[in-house]
Image (tube, rainbow, N blue to C red; front, top):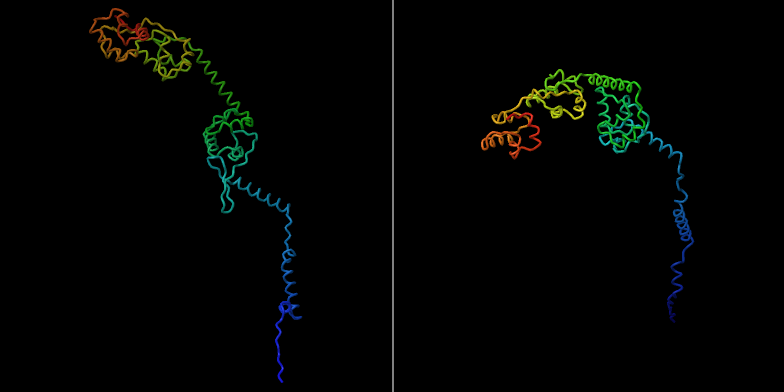
Length: 319
């Protein structure tokens, strides 16, 4: 007799249980793994470094940096732009100098002082060269004469300038000497401009040896002065000087040397300061065509002879 065995396939629920049916040892292993995962998840929170901001430490750091920058300011070199270059290790950077205003004497202030006032290196060198050559600042406004000093710097520094009394006294002494010299000039006697020599002209205020020679040379070319106003025509004689000497000038026109307009050649005519070549040539051409001149009216017929020129020439013309 044979017995038959029939295999019964597991249902779906039983198959699911087979996958999640763990032994006791496997369950312990899974629990340990879970604990490790949780530990690793929260571990960073257990070991956070103390990031509390140290205000005092940062303040000290700032102070150290400020001190370092100040040392660079004192040892820095400035360029033409008036700014200073700083160097920190192998890094170079540019930063303007912090300026400050203080009372100073430009005659004694050192380059470092000018630098503190915000003046550029080139201008400081100009000041030093000026002082080295004996230059002096006698009043506060004199700093405005410094070449290269900007207008805004002049306006900013002017209220702080303090000149030593010694320099001001020297300036006053020089001014007093100039007044005294001018006074001596003004006490000269009047001179006749047609007979005076260079020595006489030099006694006039504002007249040196060169001007004196020019006055006499101009007088000889003219043939003498017929008016004091002709002195103002001398080359290099300013109107201000002429107005100073005018009260001491006398003119005697009787000794004037005249030109015979009917016989003078071109060389004689053009040698006169008032007669240019064009005018002299026109005179000769007119004379050749119309004969001798008899009066100023005849000279007015020449187209290049203006009324002003004829008036200036008339005292020197003889018919």
